Length: 411
Image (cartoon, rainbow, N blue to C red; front, side, top):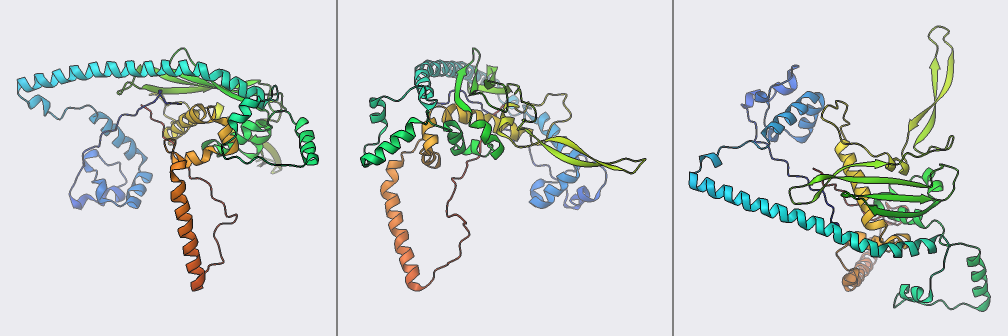
């Protein structure tokens, strides 16, 4: 599925170098007072460790630099004003043309969104059919099974006894157990969020679906069967976009809101209980109290971080990173997990994740075979030379695909 809703972050302007005489280089580290902007040395003259140490000891310096850079954004250098009047007129004309271009870009993005909604309506019956098979309400037709078999898929030939045993076992199993849990654990970005404690609850996940909002945005809906953890039948998370379009006509991500989870007693997976000793100042006696502290859990996904407000003085230092990760997770569920859930369940989607969605793995078959032959030749050469290392750094001999950095394009 295409990604019409994007969120672009304008390139932050590079601040001009602030230079000072070499004699002032040591003043920042030795002076206890907060330095003025005019005394800031060129950061390029400091190595990474020194600069990091400098900022760590002077948090006020970071805020001051950010404020100074913010005041430089949009400030004219005076070059345009110095141009002759006829040239300035032409510049103004080009700006007018650019505004017309921006209107067309916004119109393009809006039409792309409408096109995606149109095809999503066609996808929906397929998702509903998938849900009935996963949850055991229906069986796939012969034509669906035949279409799902690969051209080169081998057909297992079993004896009558083996076939009968297999049929008896299948008849007692409804649908595809742990379908969504398995798919999520194979989807790299989601797998990192699912803890062992979460798995028992996620086994009751019966469907994950998505719907568009009347305004720009979308909602992710997680459906659960009755379980011992919470009373919610559905838990949703909604991603909202700003009303105005961005510089390139794209929709700009604003914030997300999640459903409140109604946890049953002592079943909240987002906290853990810790024992803590307390001493009475008067009697000197100690007692053990139990406190709940936040812990890692997939269900924290439904309590998304909120963008800081202008008057918020308690903004977390990693808020931008958390917002980007939260946005990217929503996009991964919307664009990867829901449309191709069966490929994540079987693990086949991992090869596309490694190569890239725009690459055809069949194009690399010959090359892979050649590489394997070359590796075999190299192994034979090493063995013949007696240079064989029996020790290995890998414990299980398996490797996990590397995760690419998630990037949420925010304004």
